[in-house]
Image (tube, rainbow, N blue to C red):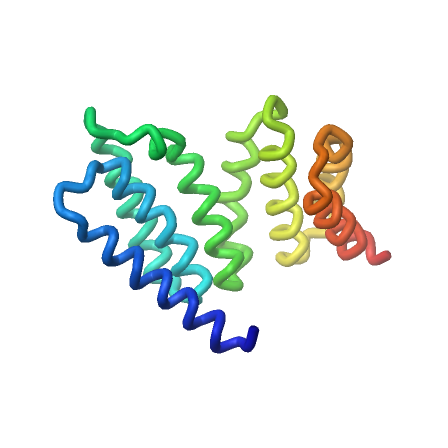
Length: 170
């Protein structure tokens, strides 16, 4: 994929999300899910203002729950919006802005869900490494190493190995 085709795809995704957000009488939880998706799309488009606007919108909708919440929207919480915001800042090449959101995500995930927790730890590891904090990145890799044996995802193992090489220089 050429660099401009990726931007076009994210612009197309943003346009579809904008259309979905204009659905009349949309339940707040459904609107929050759409806004959550818009956060990440804004990061991929390198649009920091849209990241902030979409985050505010998602949190506003989450603060107004009603009885029309569809079952498929019940997973969205402030913590998941934080996770999306952190990933958006990473996509936007602003890792320092991602750190507090990804720290929150690590704290919010529990070892009861090892794949989710590992994903959160690896995102934060990658972020602090990009910010130049090798000590913290190595500490986080230690946490990830304790989790890697509890999951069966080859993609997560590959990501762990890639980050380990980058952080340790080997």
